[in-house]
Image 1 (cartoon, one colour):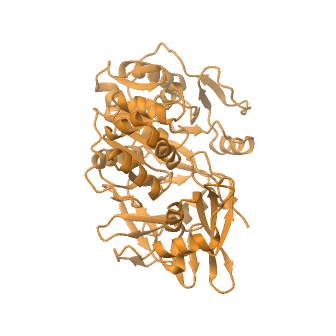
Image 2: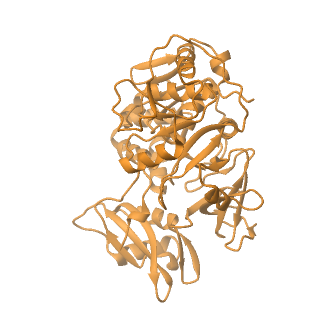
Image 3: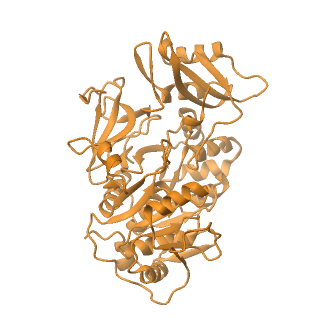
Length: 480
């Protein structure tokens, strides 16, 4: 058995482990509080946690994992229909919550347990196998009801250890972030990651550039964020010397969950002298690739496969692409100890997700650069545009559009065209709503930077782009 939290049993008890605002716990305090949760839920089948950005969520999650039970994180912002589906599908026996948290109606059979002070104290980690379920995390459900990806304990351990290798992550690191805790980015990487290393995590509760500056200036060494957060940082930097100095002093700035636009990369680098590194993962795979701490952080690339991860690009007919030319587009498929085991109650979807030789079909399209690094060009379903005989990734066009001073936000999709097969559509939030950039202006701008066949043929102006809780653009919500 690979212990998920060796520091809880053997680490320095008085070192701070968790801090949420003004509230904190040492490793000794966390061991006692999480041990109390573990004792309280012992014997349960599955345990859900109402994953608010509070200390109790982290304590509850650690307690459930100490008990060797599967944890089901619940998004507090879920709609009633989605929440009902997740509870009916995962059938937890217990739901953990912070005292006073207002939970929507849950089935009567599900017991509510408030996470708080408890007498039992420290408790040894349950002796369960590495393939035992650790988390059941529900996907976004863009193509139907959310599916529960069952992540085994080996996936959590292998991903966090691979990131420790890539990022030189140690117990001396102090991580700051303001990510939600119902997803793998905020919960697995952002909470379990520091605790596995024996380090410290400071959660902002609610993200703000001011909070980032405060924590980095007072000892934090790493920042995790999503592109929306880094965009807000980039916007704040020109007038905020303290923020620039704090970011310049960080050991590692990491962005994930979606592609970070090139113009935000460059604005942050220009103001701080530090480059944001990107990594690539999914709910079903945890982390697959990353720019290494000692590697070159280039805007638009997500680095090389992590230790233990096999990655290949394949054509539509299933043949493997071997060219590292930065141009040949294929679907990413991965295999390794970081993968989920199944979609809960969905053997059909599980079987369809894997190839005969055990690779997971990610649905993400990418190219390999000559140095082996991966550059993602978009999702197969929404971001791969076949126009005039070319395979075109929406991501590079979006980055080109964002370089135009008249564009504040941009998304690119394809729509049917009788001549081209698909034509490129640019959805643009103008910097000045009263003087939006024209189609000719944007088409020329893109054609000069990329190639003429990648220019948009249609431009539609919006007040804002539809985004989910992680800041990802919901392209299926864009329609003509």
